Image (tube, rainbow over the protein chains, first blue to last red):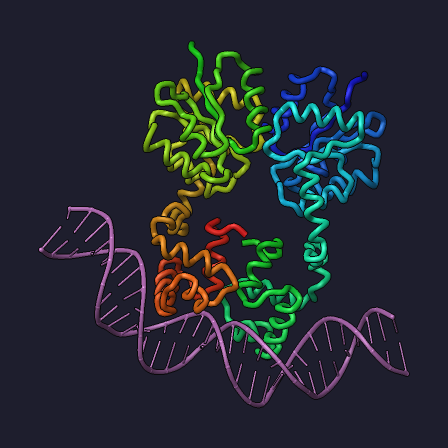
Length: 220
Length: 220
DNA sequence: ATTTTGTACAGGGTTTTTCCTGTTTTTGGC
DNA sequence: GCCAAAAACAGGAAAAACCCTGTACAAAAT
């Protein structure tokens, strides 16, 4: 057995240091190549001549998040294995990460020993998927039809005008005021509303707001 | 010098274990009394006969978050010092925590050594406030007038019924349906709406939703 | 060249929300 | 026991939101 070369990408320094300390505590056969604050930092610090075997990757990060980072890794260093370590346990995120080909996904409630297991398993078998993850995956397959509309597709679904409308709909102004501001007839606003109701499958202006917030289309 | 008795409240097990590992690594004069997943868990695990000197507290937690936990501690164990360790760096959260009397606030970017410094400082001087935290505090004082309504005060401002109403208002159901569901007259719902419009200084149902989302009163 | 799509608008309606001023009952503190 | 606040309710009215069908025109896709 040889050293497993590890890199960490997480914007939470304390967490990173804590992870390192845990890894070193459990097993001495790991070596930490480098740490990065986010995907951009990873691009700077990764060394093609000394690639890590496994990258521990967070999802929520400034500048360049986990999804973008894994996509970049897939294009540039497809042999580097990624183990996601994130407090995000939304099915959507898990499934999206698995689609990107990550080798494992550890949630917030894993034991430190499981981390070591995961690293070993990824080195030996090439992956480490817990029952929890497999469960999420299966469930998402079964409901793949009703999540037709996903975050990325939504922006394509909506026209520029509709996005503009949606932003203003998440506001206390009335539709008539909106029409004035945009130099449009109130009936045109009516039209945007109705097509968006249709596209986003909501039934009221409140539904629009909820949708926009849920999908991060507006920041409040 | 004697042992510093420490407890951790954080729902992220890996982070907890990592923190512990860091603490033990830096200095052996600390002893970990217990760990808790959230405020409720803390209430169960805290032992009046063997209180921790310092509690490392996260903010974002299920069941009972950091704010509620610190409030509970203040009432029941006012002598226990709290050091917040959170990735939340919003001024609002920091200021609110300081108002609750926490002895320190560590953000995501602190060095492990700073953690040890903070613990020592809290034991010796009773507090540990970084320039970053002081800066936030001063800034918030300068703008204290335009944050008249704050998260903590809002919950007191609203009655139970009004909170219940607000949650349902962040939904696509109509007020009439709401009345049916709650076995109330639509006119009663009318009343809740109007008093909340007043209290929260909003002008429409969309305003209610925005308010609720902004202040984390509803999760979407 | 034809169809689709985005944009903009309209008539004519119903439903829901919003606003006003009131009353009654219940409940928790002092 | 009294008072204040909360909870429940009501009539009446105006404004806003919602729904349906249909027109027109330009640009882009097929």
